[in-house]
Length: 317
Ligand code: VAH
Image 1 (tube, rainbow, N blue to C red):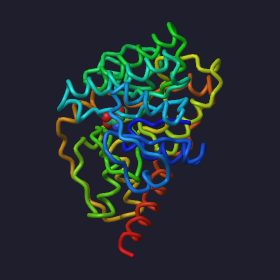
Image 2: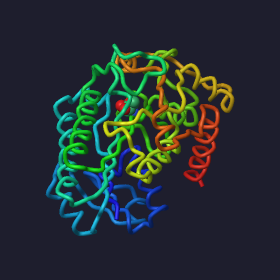
Image 3: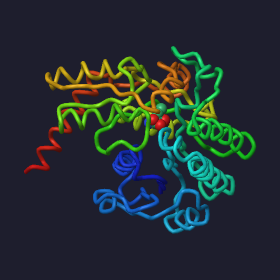
């Protein structure tokens, strides 16, 4: 049985659906700090868990005999800059709780996402390598970089089988944005269909590493199903697919919605985006466990707009 912490987040919602499809609805326990959506609550077991509360997590592990934990609970970059201490508390103490539960053998495998936010302004920005200078300038990035070294320490010292990916900006359409700097690329599709226009909080040439959620979910499952001896990196793997700027996503959207209007009003999130790389090298993931992305900007845009149109129609029917 698998336990997902932070199941109501942007990744959690779709990872829960995917894992339930693979392992069976009743073998995947969804949990979050508050109730989940109707679909999640009705399709399988759900528990209210504060991901920093080790005792509650342990009681749920024992209740369902869970053997793996996927820890998706976190405060993302933009929100974390507004609540630094709360972000550090949630991002680090949820990881420490789960690491100890694994060290005490209550579970035998853990997934924990890191982020390209672990790179900072002094990191090479193009084709950023797996091993390089890492001086993150956001609390979110600092918490993820510290978390990576905790993962590696518990693996080296206690044999904990924890696996991690440095997600780029993840683009999805099933949930509204959740406080991330890359979330302009999620919101822009909703606004393009709802309003025909979007006011972008990043400047038009802000190129960032991105990935369609289908690719991110496949990478996550592939990493967790890989043989232990194939996992050579126990901090966190670089993971890459596409890179694009607001200007490039706008021209892709215009192929579907020709009179889409865009305006640019960069805010505090511009400095966060400017501190991150523009493209990532993920040769280790491709070599160690055969990672390969499927979606590019064009096929992602087509898929998102097709699905959003279907959803909007359903709402009006
Ligand atoms: C954020 N979506 O914007 C997350 C992610 C690399 C971006 O970490 O904070």
